[in-house]
Image 1 (tube, rainbow, N blue to C red):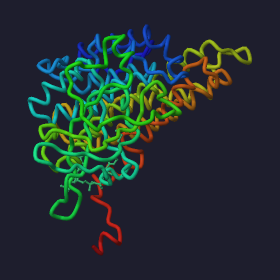
Image 2: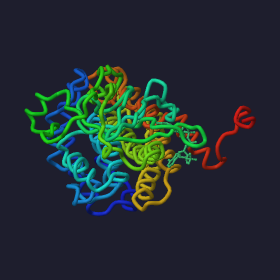
Image 3: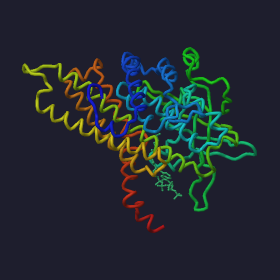
Image 4: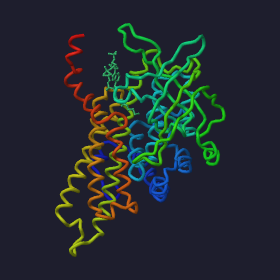
Length: 418
Ligand code: COS
């Protein structure tokens, strides 16, 4: 943290990690902090900074150099999310969703040709990407997907709608799930596909030289829907994805037929680590702002950070941040090592989402009426924190995942009868 050191960092971070962290920190302070409030207020997508982040190589951090990445690791990618989210969670999720949700399934489940064609573009930040899982009838129950893919001789025809998709309008490369048939046990057979479309903001993308690839063949029948007007993450782009007889070539199936659900669950295991880091960053950003404010603000002729009521809360805050770091960095290292990490990712995400929400409410409280105005960053961080308990699996879903590791699947009377 600015002005504070964490011994947790000493345990986990290499010199390369520290250099990356410091570089992103400097970029966020110099380039993002001055404009974050305006982009939030206007709900405007920060194309100029996206181009700068692409130039810094932030979109390719965990991918091998052969795919135009930086050849670093999952922890490095988490550090990028953490540093960006301290200053502007909207910027952080724009990068995070491209890495964890679009590039990641292509890296882990794609064939060589798909990696060369799509992953390289995402890794360079040449275009943004997204992941289509959630549907009107498939939120927490991700297997409830109703998007269908019908097999033809040399292509698939997709019909359906995905909702609440980060980077949905601005992105060009997407991975999405669809039902391709029935399994022998009668359950839906879910597969995943790579689809492409032109960015909605073509003019802005061309102006900054990022966000549009001239050599992508777009998927006919695939478009984005309405842009959501949100409580937080206001400078990030959230839209529907619409497939109307979308024609996807056979070679764009991602991974094996019928493995789409599992592949997406594994993708979300990684996404949850990125989100944990993001939420940790929000809690740290809110603490930094609060330390600054409470050591300058005086009441009753005393710096307000000298009141015990504030000191004790700040002590808890720092303690929780250190605990959140252990959970998050540990989960990142397990994923990097190819070890099981669903439970650890869920724990990190659950813990850090509750931490970010607790911390930002405290931050606003300790800023008093100032904290309730848009002049101070903490009100934006408080609004941005809320999605942490909802997106990439609600806190209830994280608890389901963690409990299943201890207790196995839930049995209900209907399931026992069946
Ligand atoms: N990695 C690999 N495989 C996994 C997995 C994981 N993390 N989680 C589940 N699976 C597999 C299971 O092993 C099971 O395989 P078999 O059919 O071979 O037995 C299959 O997937 C179905 O698993 P399960 O029965 O646990 O699925 P459920 O329908 O009960 O759903 C939850 C599990 C609720 C955890 C899942 O639907 C979920 O994560 N929902 C939230 C979705 C979400 O986060 N959405 C936000 C998207 S915003 S980017």
